[in-house]
Length: 198
Image 1 (tube, rainbow, N blue to C red):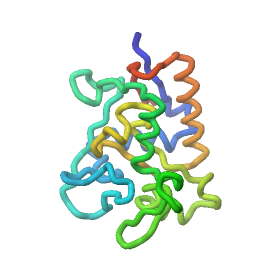
Image 2 (tube, rainbow, N blue to C red):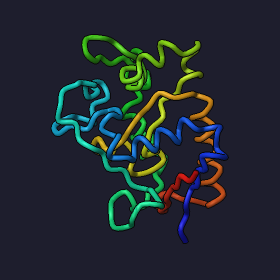
Image 3 (tube, rainbow, N blue to C red):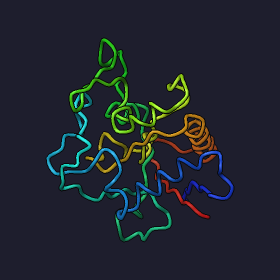
Image 4 (tube, helix red, strand yellow):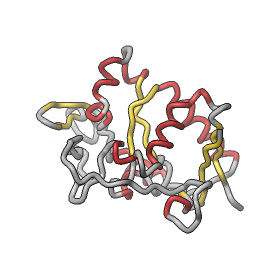
């Protein structure tokens, strides 16, 4: 049985920003500009030291799977795999610093400045600065591939993207994916795809 989570741009306007992020992230013509940048030698397993924004050169295109509309002969067309709760937590810990894991306050440093809780606050600093308070509600750090997959940040070796987007839209998308997962009775280890249609 093929399970495909469908996102329709003309219908799903409550999470347009998520759809836009996925389209940017999966497109090798544009994803060199996504964060974190993919470079040889960069360390994606140290949450306290995110890869620098640059420009440092040698940025590579990323490859992300799960796209139902891509050819099955290429990596992009291979399915996602549903993660366990432990794997999902490990995916988020790559770029999200919970104060209980990184005391005293989830601090990390980049380019001589201190940031808290999320790499998005470094990569998308201007978005957080311009957003209404409290930014913990109005801005969320969206990730793709999703943390709920085994292709998420912990195993992606840099082939992932995070973006600061509307908290409302991010939560709407997360709820929709969660409801779909329950309806499909998707269990850890199960394969699935996504599709984006007009």
